[in-house]
Length: 419
Image (cartoon, rainbow, N blue to C red; front, top):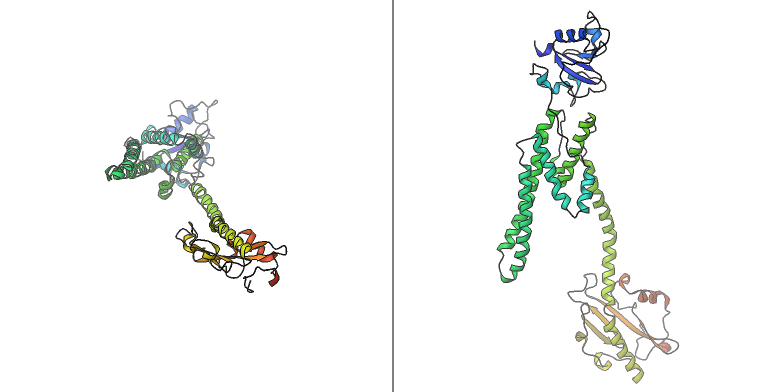
């Protein structure tokens, strides 16, 4: 009988068939199929009750379960959609060239590793990566059950060997570099590169096996290559969890998601980018202020020399020599290129290679003044200072607004009126 004339029967949420019309009539008469069971054949738009299709068949008193029928293939969809109208779960996925009932049954799908990918990630972190070394072998072993030609386990084993040997060669080569030997270092680098190539090859091989073999179980999969490249073990585990869910529930929707991996990647990256945009400028400002603060010991020595000279002579020193200091270029540090005394003022120049570009070529002018009690104080935010105000120490910024300008009677002799 042509396949187009064969019948599919749905009863108690399970499917049977295809069978010939004569067999179905006989089994109705024997009570193996109830008259309220559903039936479908090519050309029908929807499932129909057996009693409507075969009204002349007498219904026996107690219906018995089919005993000579093969075990059900899988649960029927809730709406008993006609095979021609279904997608991934349609009866049309069955090989229509099969002419016997037994030949139409799909093989039993071995239970896949159903651990959620998030737990795989968590266990990998808790075991410092050991779980992440073992789990790919578990995945590859299951793939081999549905694809006997899979070589993913071999690729993963070679990748792991390359990783271990590569690290040994790399670190051994790092010690040999001092003596001019670079062979081990280069070999280690090549083996580590080979690890990634073999590891990715294993996962793309497993993905190919899933694409080729799962449709035979009624589970068409769509695995994104880019997502697999970046999230290999976790993304494939998400697919295997979806397969396990389909096997247990018979539902193929919703499909395994790949967006969640990109959300988890892009989300933290976006947050980090925002925080970096705020933190980096603040940190750079902090570094500049720290470099200015590092000049304090040098400027303190110059201040002491100026004050001592003033109390001895009642005048401010005109230069480094009169203050008893070394030449300006000899008074230097990591960030300070010179300290010069000019009419009592201390001019600090930041022009070293270690100085921040925001500070380089700028000067800090520290100017003395005498308060009403005759004591010498210092200001660093007056004219002559080219260091931007935001980088000045807090005391300098407060002086620029809080301290009043001194009258000539309050200034030490030798301090210009421009102060």
